[in-house]
Length: 393
Image (cartoon, rainbow, N blue to C red; front, side, top):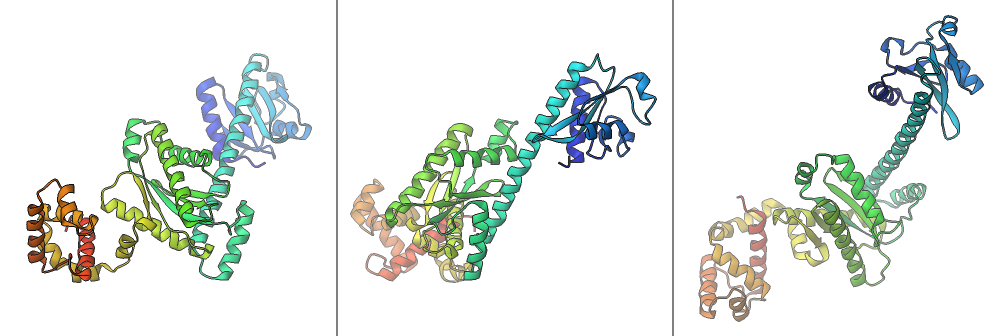
């Protein structure tokens, strides 16, 4: 095992701060790679080489120290990782007096190395998973699919299972940081991924990773056969995760969920749909909740229209209505009530005649008749979305 120089020096610095003892760490070749005496780094330590060769501790007295160049009184002992010698740790001092300290330092060093290498393995797997996810979202041809299938097998996934893409956005990350300074971005990322794996509705075939500091992507495996059950399965998973993270850390999640496509080659489409749902949620100032693309098809199609076209066809209506709060409220309710005046008036707690008056005002202002003309009704729906998406124009 090749011990990282930086890791070794971090350990040395901590030990010196806590034990007030100078220590050296030597690699498998007997070269000092970390030390409290920086000038000794990179120099050869003869005793360390002997420790590794004999695989046993060697104590050096003051008398013995004079026999070796660059060696001081102290204890030199091998440390281990996975039952193999990882190197040598040398602690300066009279061997008998530092006996207990030596054992503690060796134990702490071995634990620290194990933790760091475990972190490295987790990070490496997470990095591989991130690259794999990017690969999934770039697939276009059957050759791409074959390549991704092989990669998936190496990571332990079956790429041919049914999956839907969802993106989770943490909307109050800054508040959580301020509330608990001990939380860091890395700790929260690690915590969230861990909670996803522990969720009752999680599956070992779920593929997930951070894509930014505040966003997590999940390729959610679904087992249901009927389309309605598929979406219910994914929605319940999103609710479970949202509740867990809110209860445990106070995190608020806005979740966008794409639609199901019958081939892995279309996972990128599900990803685009989930992104569009998040964008819609952001524009509507939503801080938490779950938006399924299948429930917002009109809005998704609207998001696919080039903004220049939207401006060309809708801005003239927008200018006329944007400051008419009462009329906008009435338009939204009319659309919800399928243009039924009576139901609209009841929902808005206004007299029917008031609703009729407002409708006539809308009709005259925009020169449309959505109750009697289907095309005008579609235009009105587009206008409402344009109003919501362009609050700051």
